[in-house]
Image (cartoon, rainbow, N blue to C red; front, side, top):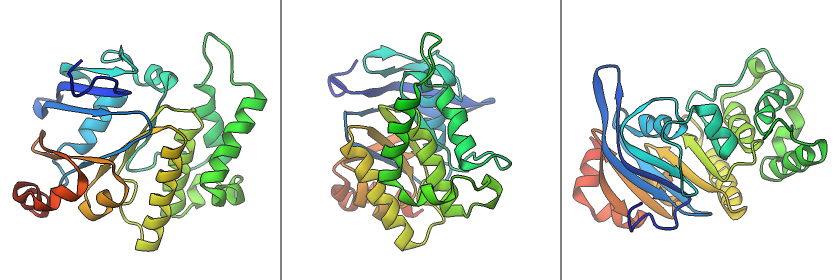
Length: 247
């Protein structure tokens, strides 16, 4: 573990990842401390989603290592990482269209069992109450099928579903994309509430303005390499960051 990542809840150290024969990530390193929101900012195709997929175990890491709470998870499959406390809301939401919102939650809650023991009804209820405190709107469409949710509702359900795991780390891939400004503000408020619960949040984001509204720290990525790390506001003074993000 690097000195910069000492005490980190999640650490990505020198990770290189390929999609087929093409190398996408080139020695990416970042860390996430307890109860903070970190944004990974870059243009489309810069490597943001590949970074999230590498952390979640959806893509194999060729080089480097990933640790969660000090334990290496680099070679673990995605479902085991989820059981260890990594929640994930993908860019396309991944909602099962023919299942109700409640049933989408139930599938994820099944993963929370450890050593063969399922989550108790009391614990599951407590988790749902915590989700409703963040997204009270979800309570009104629990019996609605995924097929009949709006784009914003799907994003809300995707985040809420990841929360049913009781994660320590939450990965959000482009959670604000395609949303109206007032809805973006609603989601940013939700992220702040999640962070206040002690959950660490890593957000892949294309919009630097949105990133500065929610992030404690910011990484900028371009062509699979981290080109900036620091205070979100200082990114605006970095000409390389501004040039690469604006294209």
